[in-house]
Length: 121
Image (cartoon, rainbow, N blue to C red; front, top):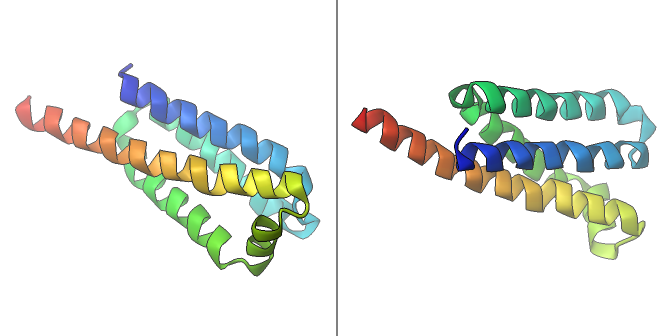
């Protein structure tokens, strides 16, 4: 497994771990959506580990959806701007922006490297 692929899989695992800590903190009426999102990150980690090329587009889509979703949610913005509750704000910032941004960047780098090796082969 290439280093880019390992890094991307580790980011997806980190997102899943942070999300697992965040599920109990969220609104209970969104529990099904929260578990669905977590399972999708776990599935993307497995797919990225096994067949790396199949996960590019879903990685982009889900990272952008999470970033946009956190940005347009007034409740999330309030929590992150006031840091109240503190633990929720940390989970939202790390899981919703930092790790998602890393996922996007590492996905772009991996995609470029994959295309470069595909063209030369």
